[in-house]
Amino acid sequence: MHKNSYVFFFAAVVTISCSILLAAAANLLRDRQQENIALDIRKNILASAELGSEEMTRQEVLGLYDKYIRSKVINLEGEEVSDKTVEQLDPRKDLNLLPLYYAEEDGEIMAYILPISGKGLWSTIYGYIALEKDLNTVMGITFYQHGETPGLGAEIDKEWFTSNFKGKKILSPEGDLVSITVIKGKVKELIPEDEAYHYVDGISGSTLTCKGLNIFIKNDLEIYKPFIDKIRNAGMEQ
Image (cartoon, rainbow, N blue to C red):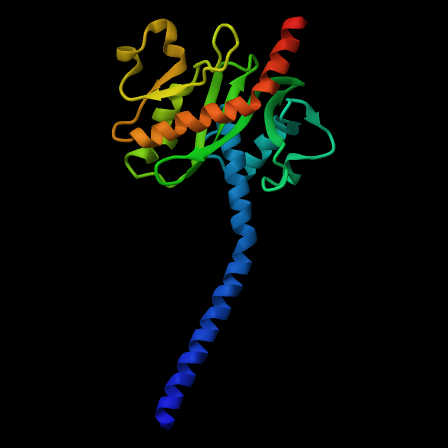
């Protein structure tokens, strides 16, 4: 009886001790984990606007971000909201507000950077798409968080795939949103040349992941369309 009590007591002590140590470790690491997530987001914002490189150190990422990237909050009508910052946005509460990033040098905007996200095959995919000053031509795109199939859908974050988006157009000549479609196969073989700037080559064996990209990229661009129209119309009037 005493031996059994000792075993149970010892097991309880070990279990409780391990739980306390794990909880303490989680709390100690939480801040660093959040810092790493924030750093990865900044790195991808920079990458979408073709700033920096994969080999950048933490200090280089933070330095470039502070030098070039600005942000503001807009509403669904495309108007700036001055009493809130991007960092203050709560996606669960601020449903009518949108974060907007832009790359600026010497007071001149080089690119507008929009967050994009949606369902792939297995996961929610997060990324950024950068548009040139015309708010039509894609400067770059990144996908920084997902759980798609390695070797298949997971190829969406590889440079060989994301580079296909550069120079593509999201608008028709009339200014309507067409977005960009990832097709099954090769654009050069399947799409007429005068329409090719709305399409990119797909990833073999990843039809559902690419279908998800097509849906959420267009949906998110649609949300930002009032802002796109507002800036483009203002530019035409000048």
